[in-house]
Amino acid sequence: MTDIELRKPGRPRSAEADQAILRATLELLAQDGIQGMSLEGVAARAGVSKTTIYRRWANKDALILDALRQSKPPALTFDTGNFRADIEHYLRSLRALLAEPLMQRLSLRLLGELSGRPEWSEGYFSDTMRPNLAALSGMIERARARGELRADADTTLVMEILGGPLFYHFIFSLFMPDQPEFDIEKFIALLWDGLKPFQPEDQRAASTGGAGTE
Image (tube, rainbow, N blue to C red):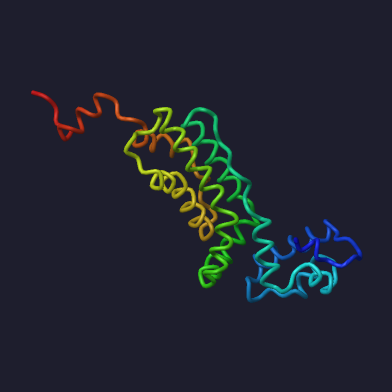
């Protein structure tokens, strides 16, 4: 039986109140962190009573985890039929997500705090990141099957190469906000020669160590 099925008859839950509480939770997390935020503060910001929160969530930890899960990024479903276009689409979506002011403040506040709560990190990772990592892996494998990706490229490493520089730029920009926007086109142009399949002349050069013929 679900939690809703176990509830006693009474006043129905308000979707608007739920969203106001979750939004207030995220805002106070970004402002005060896990330790600093309180249910009293959430209730005041959301315009509800503390009792209203306790009807929905057992304690502060349950509310925080639910709010973090609700804020997860949308599922990535990139399949344009072209690997280079897929990469560009993925990076543009990721850049837009990381540009959201609340996401930036949350990331800066929670990076350290979540590392001290491994059980939270695992739960949040499973709910929010695994589906998108699976989608990204599928994007890479489809490119390999189409012959657009070199056969010896390690899928996990390619995933890290695609997302890593943008996350680096994001973290760096949190402390130095005057950084220019991450240039996706230049990044792909620089990356592409390492991802595309070897051409016959590339294979010959690799087998001879790049030495020319005399």
